[in-house]
Length: 297
Image (cartoon, rainbow, N blue to C red; front, side, top):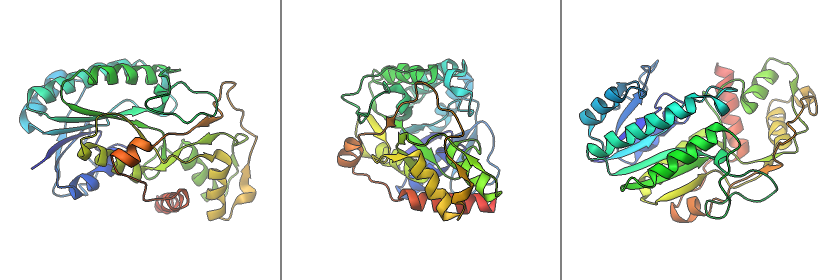
């Protein structure tokens, strides 16, 4: 049986990957630094492990002896992670994990990267093979550094570059969650001009795409995104229309950064044609599911 070590298993993407992994026949060993609040999946082995402790990581890999590694764990505190020193700490920890995983028979590795590795600017579609790597922050640079080391590991590997995502368990301060919660409270949702084009994908699709990549054997860097451009104005308006609160949205009340890229959209040819994967949720469907979840909260 395929045995996978899933890090960040209690996180935004990781928790959504469990069902897809089980569906593809993996024995799932979920890793988190805190025990989950509720064991939703009874047939998953949970390992409370501090991945920043090399000895704990070594013991974990020796105990589990997984064939596959799906690595999501990182420092991602909203508003702080872009240039936090924790990025360098997690680069070192990820390399330690990689080494221990391989030493204990690991065969296939997929790690999560970011569209922030790319040089942003202009209206070009961001491509794994054509777009230069030029991170504007420490987060993106550390991911570049880790990916280059991963490429030298000698095992089967892939690197999924995440673009923009939303859905259940998202930080309430992020764009889509923030707008939904403001409108649910019947408050004004203040936004920028909203003309920026972004590639957003529902988190369940993001997780499913990573699992498909892990299971495919495709190697190298692969964009994990929808491949479709939507302006912030279109996204926010979709939320407002579903809640019948268009009058509560105020565009142009939040300033944009002077270097705000006009467009960040992925080329998804590798994901579509080589991995053989496509999204299951449209933007409208994903927003509907996210609104339902926040209403329950």
